[in-house]
Image (cartoon, rainbow, N blue to C red):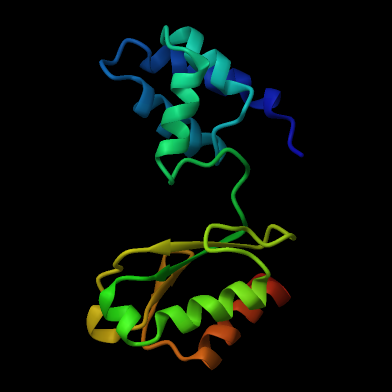
Length: 160
């Protein structure tokens, strides 16, 4: 478990710079996540105090937007497209394969912190369905074998 208080000097710098911005909460949260990799729990009361919000309001915004993380990110992020084109080409079968192979749900992170699984609803690769994005790189026309290869590469040596 990381010591979230180590990031408070950075959080205070962000708050000082952004607190006067109209609607500052989202820019503050984005800046903190960009700098730290996630929004540390210890930062929430600091953000609330600086922006004259309740802790519940800050936590509510963090939990509403699924791209905000409250823990350090996994080493690799795998986003499987679940939109109509990919669904029609077998994405649900691939999702089940991932859940079984990694022993996690659609929004989970593997126990070793190597891979986070996130559904996404269109990667713009509809002509090449099914598709996924692994660490920002799109892989299309996926087969169960190719998917297993990609995941095993991440798990074995960290190179995806």
